[in-house]
Image 1 (cartoon, rainbow, N blue to C red):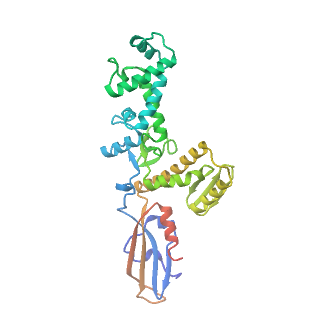
Image 2: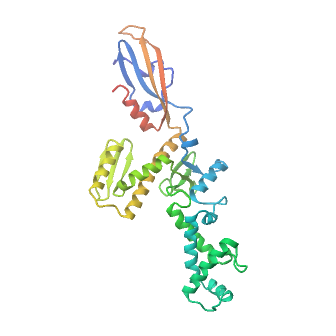
Image 3: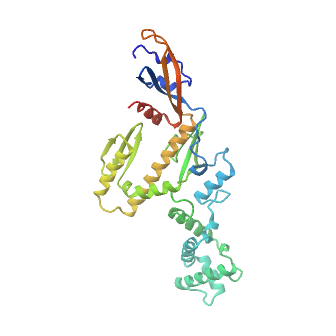
Length: 350
């Protein structure tokens, strides 16, 4: 097959420019020449749509529903401010807000003045004020006010509410616990990254312009992997996966599974992870899944999408002077990202 000039073959589907940097896969079977190569996918499937959507943005091109999904994931209201109304929506949320509010009221000069003006004691101690605060909360919950005083009339309530909201967000009781904020670098094309990790430019990078929200299967994977990732993590460069263990060692692997097993074996030799280690492991697990989605999304945005083509030719000339005629061309589209596409190409005839 040394006399075959691949680029002169009469392909029905034009090879992608990346074939200038990769080898065509060629095989001759019973006089039929089979050639596998990559072609540009001009109409690739969007990787971030419908029920599989994980990336929501506040970009000017995004619609209102996308904004609402992003706000819900972050626990924000329609004005992009902390949604403090959610503090009174649900027993666990209200209990947390009540606990913070009563504790602050018991040491607040503002509440002490109100309690002195409306109660039997003008100068009550902290225990007395705590009891008055608890009673105030119960009564205003039913009546909306106590002696014409509403909960939000106290100036300290706003600060307490924000603190309670922040705690509930960190616990996943408001918003999505594993949501991740995203930056957008927009200069002749968009590139999305986890906030603080990608290209940072004063003029072209919008910080926290989007959010990654895990689907149910992502949440299950996070739960499965967090105890392992409490002791290490994995990074991928091209077709090489490297496991980094928290004892300072690392190992290059040929697959993600191999790298994960190396971290898993190390984790199994350690003591039960602490709450801090588990939180770190959870963050690593969700960021890995987010990075996977961002890799596909950015590849799609940049047009880095391909189809795998298998063309078959018959020699209608002679052995010394072959003339190849196309007899079949089958395509399989939907490869997003050149690394995976090239890897699939290289395994065609093996």
